Length: 202
Ligand code: 5GP
Image (cartoon, protein in one colour):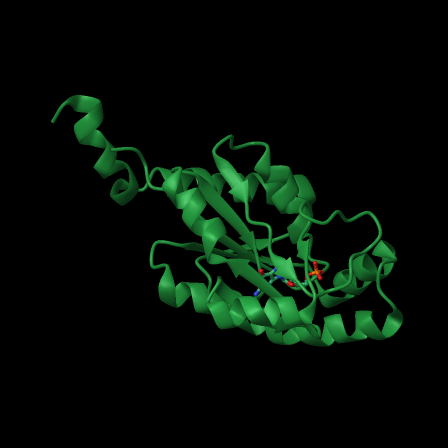
């Protein structure tokens, strides 16, 4: 029996460096896939449809909700975002781990339905640093940045429900922390035990 894929869920206030962390980690584990979410958010410069997100209209997204196509979905900063059930099932069937970069509301939904999931929260070193990073990205209007910072305060309150917290002060160190978490989770007895009969002809 081969190893069952693990669901790794990563949340963070936007600007905490979660997307860069996910990008850095994805190449390190050959059997890890990043889930590509569906969203109604307008595409940003430099983003690609089908790579960063599946960009869809609100009516299309709502039709998917009605069909029960999402494992979780939520409204974040005025736009809809969701993880397709089919994405998670396809990874599980292939024995691949899957990495989800989703908000706290989505993570809370998955915590109820995927008991073996690993929930990781990434924190910025401070709210001042978060503001500096959001302004430095030059992708959002000032009022959007203010909304993101206000949301960050409530999102940080949700950190208590996660299995692991990573403070992203020095980026390479945060990457190492994330790797360590993922490696340790793969070695949990409960995850390795089912593979022993095949390995040792038990
Ligand atoms: P952004 O618009 O900056 O790419 O993402 C905004 C927020 O939406 C981020 O916190 C991101 O994690 C979250 N997000 C992205 N995809 C999903 C998803 O499929 N489900 C949920 N619940 N949140 C998502």
